[in-house]
Length: 408
Image (cartoon, rainbow, N blue to C red; front, side, top):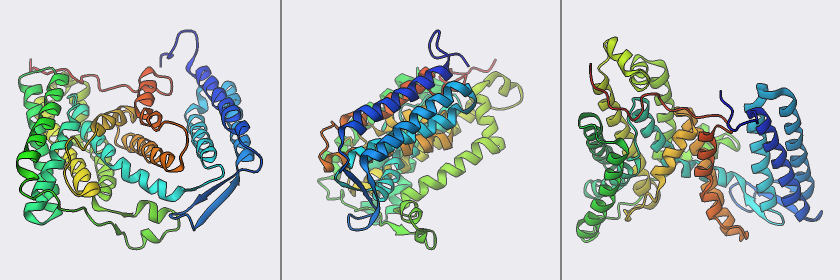
């Protein structure tokens, strides 16, 4: 692995990063609170306490742990880098939460559950892009596919009276958008970035026009949302149960799809073929794999999954369609895909992280903290740039991504 910057090995750079994190915790947070401050974390309401911590002492401990990790990283080199990076990230986030709640209380478990909800469209979008890009087709059209899915879900659910019909219709229409992207990219060899951009622009214009002209005037824009339900037994597990097993159906679909995609992509013959045409299409063709047909199918699969993500916005969150309601989440999903190194589990982790940042910015506004929430909105993109730069683990895309294939 090549170093991210000249003259400074990655392990040394990480050590300096951990050192800077510890100093920031010490100077910016620990020394700005008084010994009398307490940070209270509650469960799902303000009246059910979880833990109360002495703010300054807790911040001192977290700062010292980060500084200790910096020393271990410097001494051990790359051996424990990933573990230490995860721990220091946890220390830094914990310090921020403790400092944020000084003299206040924060529903920690409630925020964690909300993080999972917020991560749902991001993870689904990342899974959508994963199928496309692992087969060699760049997909920046996730935003447009999800937006058309959101519109179609509302229209179909309103007309049929069934939310599940809405989800199915959203999947089909999003797959049609994916088919358009596939034809342009694979058959006509249009630049895949341009093709995705065209679909995004088309989705915004078409859904806005149809909403204003047809959906809202006809009164078919209020089907309501899915009802959350608890999974028997699992939802009763202390702490974990209400966080993971008390959601509406699209959240559960996301969790199941992550496992399915991971198994299919990395443990089946189809997954092997998909990865082969994304890495070495000529070699795959030589072995009898139909490269372009495999790419077509995978782009369509990506469209189906994006449709579920679109249905989340309209049937899982709002209960109606609003213009441009995906609000750039498709691009954040693409960032989650890159941050997660083009894997299903990595996309899940990145989506959860970005969902946590999204939920946290709402809590910051409620708590009245004098930090602009826009800083947290930048987190997904900043982290993605850092990963692409190789500072915290280089993210390498499939070798043949974005390259049209012609059979020799």
